[in-house]
Length: 557
Image 1 (cartoon, rainbow, N blue to C red):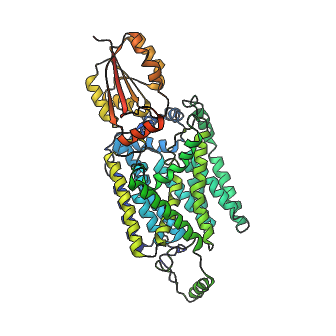
Image 2 (cartoon, rainbow, N blue to C red; image 1 turned 45 degrees about the horizontal axis):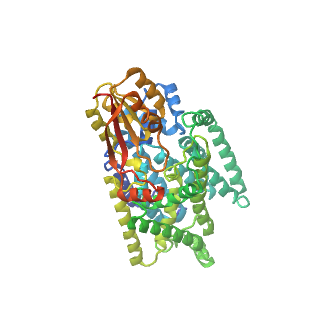
């Protein structure tokens, strides 16, 4: 019996004649991920991952002790630890592992769109993901983001396959392994499993056997995750234990953490919301998602069409085609498909924001979009459905052209280091470390905020450099009292909202009392002028003109 290439029920998951377009789009995504991979210095969180794995490959105890210093499961650091022993520790080598994970994730995202809504929608979803400024930015960081996307998308695809009665023991075993690995990559991946459980419970009357199997599978996952308790306890009582997880958890900040991801997921983190193109792209992307939700929810097969398909199947022919049925449903009732897609976007995001703002030792920063990367495939599924819902070719072409323009500007901004929502991404600290190293003398003491990544780079420039993180300002004071260095350098983030660093509070007023005077001060990595003005209006005080301030104190006359 002939089968349609657009039919997601086809037994052949990857027909050879259908490989060309997905392969080309994946190749484009790989090229965008690889382009200028090492052009920017590592930023703070990337240096944390690099430090965690900067030990001999056989030193298991040392690796575990370093993993415990950060609220992060061990799977990604483990992969990075093994990878850098082969590829080295350059910026390109460290980031290339994430590029590999992100490229493989594109194939899974395509498969998710294909099996959910059909071939044309699958290609649209793949094109959105491959050219997404958000995924290009986050997918190649020395972070767990691309691995989390790969595992969570695989988990969701397997879950939907099993839910639709396509389960085999191989898929059940794969589902258990992928779910376990996802949580070992990021604790927040548990929100995806909770969402899957709730979706399954909604089908209890129709699929009782499936629900029982899923409960058993998730029970096995929980057992396999038992070792994480031994990690999470010391992590949450370690270096972050004395930080207040609710230090910025006002209602406004929580609302921002829920709303901001939709802007970042649609147009990326390198085009400002007040940029007309950024606003246009966000509104266009969200409108497409809403239209896609409505299309999936309302486009069902009439009884006549269903009868025709059954009759055609008995005759050995198929009436399905990618042109006639662009939105094939995962279930006969499209409302269920739409609700599942929306559920996999909103529920994991809400659970992630709640966890990040409430769990001791976690972070309260509002840029939760990267950590909730598992929501992105389903947003793109709805956007892809919205694109295909546009019947007029001229209107669809105009929408695609506008979206391509926004994506292009956002990507250009990213590659050129402009309009970053999170200013920590473009500090160019490697350049700063070289500048200061040329001016410093042997024996000088350096104290820097960890998120500047200055400590990582100054040690690479000079292994004998005496460096303290700002969180260890008291240790720096003890060292200065005992050794009386000629000069002390403070390299600090110019904060917008957060309180001052311990180096500013403890060292800056203390050094003059010890006979040091300020010899020079300068800024590095200029702040965007519009961003600075908005900060001044919001905070009612002068904003920083540079992202990093450098101050040199010396006793020399």
